[in-house]
Image (cartoon, rainbow, N blue to C red; front, side, top):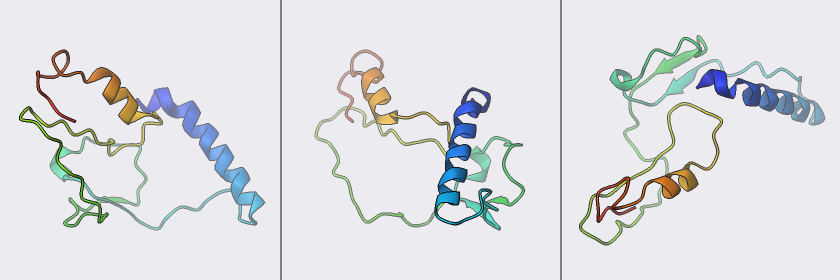
Length: 113
């Protein structure tokens, strides 16, 4: 997947460098001293392209938001779509999921989202 998105990632880096120069910063961002990755270590695949300062710290024990979403009405299975832990460069995750996760077709009849 990373090979497929490499061109877009590189374009984003060029755009970020231009924006940094426009506000008086050096073009190259030195990056953080440490990157804390909140995920279950047992579920992570090896990622040789992660920077050396990346550290898997385990799952968050709090919600980073105060918003509580209501559970949709119905008795069928509930489907929750969330973004991946990896940046893929793909946009429109919600639209893609809604277009392809169809109750009675690709999901069990009565599924909710």
